[in-house]
Length: 635
Image (tube, rainbow, N blue to C red):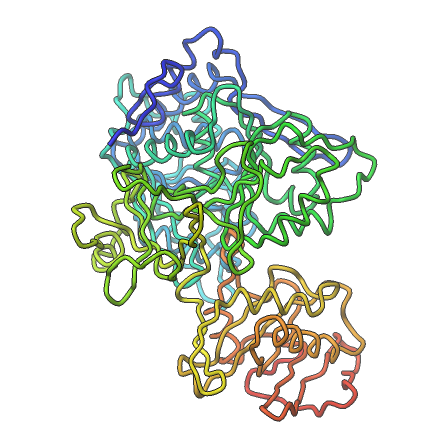
């Protein structure tokens, strides 16, 4: 299998960090910006730039400093704040031959405060058993002062104790070429292709996050495959506000260096505060490529249309607007393109894509070139790949849609589980041998290679082009009894319809649908929806009615239980994916803080827990009896 384009402009390197000295020694690249950090201040934007020669020198310096304190192949926890220093540190770990575990650091002023980020860090320390941790000096100071920290249950904080037991390296000192006073190493070879370079966690959307072991060779292969798929080159300019710790955000750091391109970075918090920032950076730097989760589009449409005194947008430079986090709805994309086409956005730039941690990140994209404008939809969704019709053409990343029960490939037009085979496949889950065998060692009849079972459902639609559509997670498919027959519905269809029932009062992307039990005959369809801030008080019966009616009209599904909650209540992963199973567990255990609930039986009778607005008296919805179920916890 040919895995590399041998054009001299793209030097073939087995691991990504070895591209850096190649670019740094070329006169045309030495002073070229590799990464730019954009800081959205209160009054104006400010930028910090890192050229290829500066990046290569900093990586060499930091790698030497790290190896003055650690040994090659050690595991190191990376807790540095987002920015250029984190970029340098991630490449330095690879050059030093270490296995990096990048984790979003909890609030340094509250290391024992609990919460999802706190729990994830505890999980990572327990599972990966790092020899050391690298963090900002202020974070290290907070950890060392946390002797008296207790957790939210009033018990001594386990994480604080585990963190204090680690050897801590200050990224501030490493940047200056030292590591806690240790003598710097004088020579090192860095990661080899077969060495474990990265442990990145799965999103945890359908279960506990799992640690995925990525080799340096698999990461390099994945970056090269993505570079060719998106036609990136030294003239490309990437804009990304995705988290730099894992998946797509981290992949685009590697991809930038492999392509010899320039990447403009911003923090996810900056985008959430002011979504228009994303498009302003595309305009300012004449970006040709930008990856965003699909939920970014409706967020920008809602909060980013107004110029608010800033310069007009110019989006005609974009060749790839990469959409991740399947499924991707065509109507949402069409609305976004219609709104910003007047600012130069080209419909042909839309690049619906697919990826997962178990394949490093990138798997496929439906984008082909500027000549392709119209992407056909399937059940309201855009495709995430174009598959070859040539039987003798061996794809670099092979995709198959398989019947989960028989293990046989299905015909085009039939849904099944997506399986992926490529040199980008991860080595397995750290410390989970049985799960690794089940997920990473699947085989198709007549095929010698191993496949990764993705857990995603897909279909290759019949037509002139063999488009692959990712229709949802297998774990999120709801089995329903409808008029005496069995029907399967992906949860996201119900959630999208529910949002359409009250779009001006519900938070998009913050609605979870699930059933109360696996048995279709005894199960209720539940919708848990977050209210927009400012929706408090008043009569919320119309919201529940709107949700119930919209789901029935759009999807033919009867909702039996609607739960309205406040902002931030619906469980999500650190990358913003819904945790529907966690929402179900909390609701049925009575641990979900409900503002209002409505139940419906087959005769359409209903009951509700009315809104409880802080200290104000609860207001009863007209025509609805109040009833407190086991999960009712009015605020």
